[in-house]
Every structure is written in structure tokens, then in C-alpha cells.
Length: 336
Image (cartoon, rainbow, N blue to C red):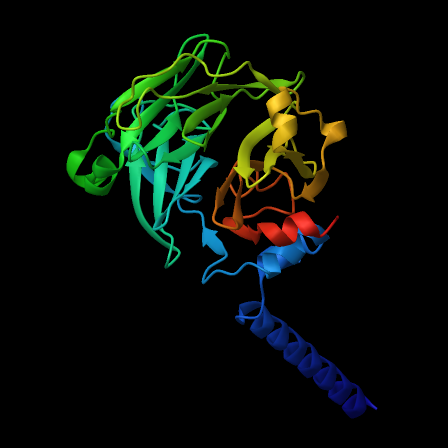
């Protein structure tokens, strides 16, 4: 009897070993996709993610465990363990991610990735501890715009691509310089930014009231001379984190706290009226919590989440440590 029991225990143990070995093998296999495991609860995003026509549709966010940057007091190189991703900009060759220190003890940074190989290239240190909520690439001025610090109004700073390409934190041991700044006096902060038809737009985040987006254009493409704010402010839903334009659509990301995020799709005509009311959105797309800025390049929408940061990972089981690209034509057709 004892012999039989021992054999049963051994058989059962062997079965468990085989089961978990196979499970680990599956988790480590190339067919396992952690984004799909989260996105499967969001069918519209999941369908458009699977249709992404890219060599890489996910990009690991650098620096979530440790980032080398400057300490705020000594201005010396130091390790930050609380970098929180916020802004996102895409070019033909590069992907840029802005992040701030959650304890506000270090300078904010921009991570630069090789878009074609989904590979980290360098860390660019910013001049202050800005929230860095927005990034936007400006092809006309060959620069990257980033949300900057100003008192009682919005400000956006330009960093030239030449400076970015030549920057080496380990050699320079100082922040990258700003070539130019633009103020948005009609909004209290530039929480998120974007480019649209050569104009620079900045909007403010408000968790209780609707946000506003201001719009400026430039006298000439080659100069930073600014025409006065181009249009009247556009009202956007509260808790807005980003805005982008694609063909005849305007998309607004919204999130706050450990609740599902949303992407509101509006028509360009609705944007021109000056009021984007979520109740009149052409489409509302549900997304995982802590969605931040969204960016468009070609036919793809790129999404970044702050849930992978140290201060957020324990707040949701659906945390993402990647920038995710989805196919926009699929995204906009699924629910029509």
C-alpha cells in the first residue's frame, strides 16, 4: 500500500513538473505576447494591434528600473529609480520618450530609441524637473518640442535634432540646451503637445474641468518667429493626456488613476468648431489604465503608458512596459 502511495505521489509530482516546465517554456517562447494578454480585454485595440504592419509593434521603455541622470541639487550624475514615462514622438528613424522623476529629485529625461530595430540608443537630460508631458517632432524646424516649465502659463521648448544626435550625457555631464522657447499665455500649463499642418498645439490637463488646446503657427517654416495664437481655444474632455490628427480625424487620449483609459475619436470638423465633447465623439475606444500621450506616424498610432513605472506597477495588474503601435485604419473601422 505504501509503495502504491509513493508511486502516486511521484507520478503526481512528475506531472506538475511537466506542466510548469511547459508553462514556463510557453511564457518564454516567441509566441507569447504580454501586450496581447492585456489587450485581449480591449478587443478594438487588440484587433488593431494584431494588424500592425511593422517590423516592430512594441518598443521596450528604457529606464523603468534605473535611469542615469542629474541630481537636482549637486547637478552630478546619479541613478534615478522612479522615472515615469509621459511624452512620445515618432520620426522616420527614431522614437522619443520623455520621463520625469516621481520623487522630483532628478532632472527629467528623454530616451532615444532606434525605431527600425526597437533598440535603446541614449538618454538625453533636460535642464529641469519638468513633467515633460508632451513631445512633438517638427520636421520644418528640424527639432523636437518638449513641454517646459513656466510660471502661470504654458511653455514649450525646442531641441534641435543636430544637438540630439551629438549629445552624449557621459561626456557632456550637463543637460541638453534649448534652442528656442514658445509661450502659450492662454493656458496655465502645456501638459501635452502635438504638431498639425505646421502649427504647434499645446493643451492643459485638468482632472475636474474640461481642458483647453491653444494653437500657434510660425511666420516662416525656417524661423521660430511666431504668429499670434492662430485660433480660438479648443475645448477638450477633462483628464486629456494627448491629442493627435490622422486624415480627417482628431484623437484624444484620456486617463487618470487605475481605471480604464479612453481614446475619443472626433472628426476634423468637430475640432474646428472649438468643442470636443466626449458625448459627441465619433468613436470611443477603451484602453488599459494610465495611458499618456499618443502619437501618429504613417498609418499607425503609438501609445505609451505610465503604468510600468515604479510608482504605478503595484496599482494595476495591467501594467505595460512597452510603447505599443496599432494599425489606425483597423482601429477606426472596427466599431463602425
